[in-house]
Image 1: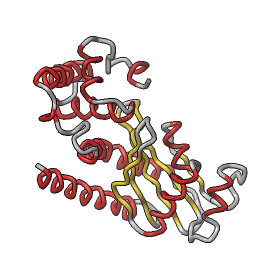
Image 2 (image 1 turned 90 degrees about the vertical axis):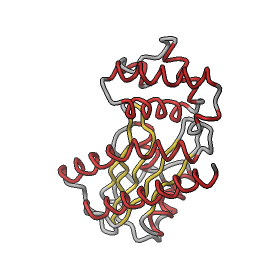
Image 3 (image 1 turned 180 degrees about the vertical axis):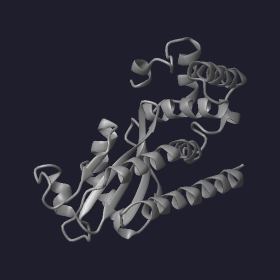
Length: 231
């Protein structure tokens, strides 16, 4: 089982790394990193293009400020076309920490599943300058395509916490399957997508998958209701 999980995790990391490289190829940026976050403050990096991207992500996580956290908090892109001059009062510790890095602009794009923000794609460019609207749209589309894969990676990385359904009791497995079927009907999506949405909610809330499934089955959580789904 451990070897199987390790293989699956390695495959997901490789695929995420490829997507990280695709951001760099698609957009006028120098580097990228991709991470997922939970409501309990946990963070898992699933792709980094280079050492500068790694340092930018590390600093933001350590300092608790920067475009990454803005995108995660608001669910909207956080775009800084000139990190040295744009609104210098924002993120003062982060700006000071990156003063010696070859970074001119930073763009943080949210990873979303429905109304839930599950992670962030952090992009940087060595020279200042804004993202064109077409580039921003393309970046958001690519980020959207990564969201489901990021949640699957989270399930594996949690080391059976939400991913190993076989460790659950038969009753809990039934609840998860029933909840998946209800989400399937509520959203009109595939069964795979419905299960991924269930995982996304559990991960974003920092709760066991089985507990969220029970909420769905007991009709305390309706994924077709945008107000409830965004809680």
